[in-house]
Length: 209
Image (cartoon, rainbow, N blue to C red; front, side, top):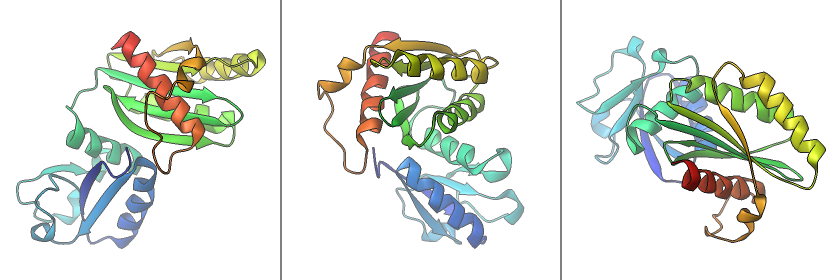
């Protein structure tokens, strides 16, 4: 997943560039920043830019920051344009509720990002924002791995139900034993909890896609 895409950034705003580079680390994306489109590599087909600056884009596909409520959403859309078709049919968040929380976020079977969380509140807040950004998707699922700690599962489910009740997502519980079979090679830079969540997401895709 890491380093799977390169997105161009065309701006004179150094603060904007710094913020996007920081966000891009979570998504495993390389941001190629320039103030001149002619200096961007030819294989960088999608560019993030600001309408206010009016810089020439030279025919590449462009995503404008002003069209989104946050830079996270802007980068997600740029990735979607670069890696898969616009118009999301299915959105999945797969959660590993083990000793520490891990989650994988998918758009139409494309792994957008994985992340670890220090608390269930932080996780639920991120899930809510993600699903709200993609509320127009035809199908939305939250896949929760089962653990021996039933109380922990119930607690997270209650928080999720309260948080995402307005976005039309289905919450499911899957047998987490599937995550121990090693169907994916362990990727450098990804935690055990993120890996478990990623494999859980693949199981959900096999059952729902």
